[in-house]
Image 1 (cartoon, rainbow, N blue to C red):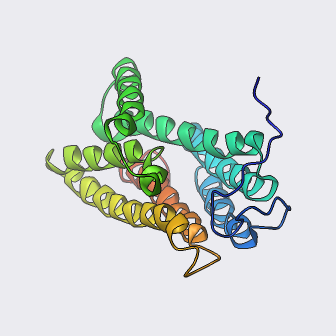
Image 2 (cartoon, rainbow, N blue to C red):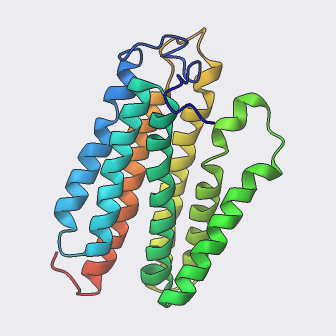
Length: 224
């Protein structure tokens, strides 16, 4: 039986094996980036229920990550990872509808297929321990790159959206790099660089939802 109150230590440089609440001050406080991004997006998305939902998930990511980097328990880790996976799936579904132009059923099928593929991608890599940090996110990166390529080759306005997503994918790759190397630089940089992942990823999530907001405005569905 899973002990949800068990401590999760030794994951990030900043915490090490210290179980105290404020053992990761930078990793904890840097989650303000998600809260700021989510609050701005929520204000901008108030007439769009789907994008409001995405904005609330961004806020939940900030809260869940803060809990994990302070409480450092298995339950807090679940609170950290669950909203991220929800955001990935929900964003993919909305993108299929609004950027690619699929119907509801087709978008749902595409999202299920994407989730299954994204979940299997880490199993294809026999990565060394220091690269395992990519496991939960490499599927999201692959999906973002794939969507950028699809739109980029579609022509018209979709090409511009594809270029935008390609740039966001590049930023996400940089963010993932900081997340992945955190455990490898502890001796050189004891506080690590996981907090940089938080800050850059907040920009990534904001940019992704902002693209959908811009697409709505350009279609004349909501005011600028």
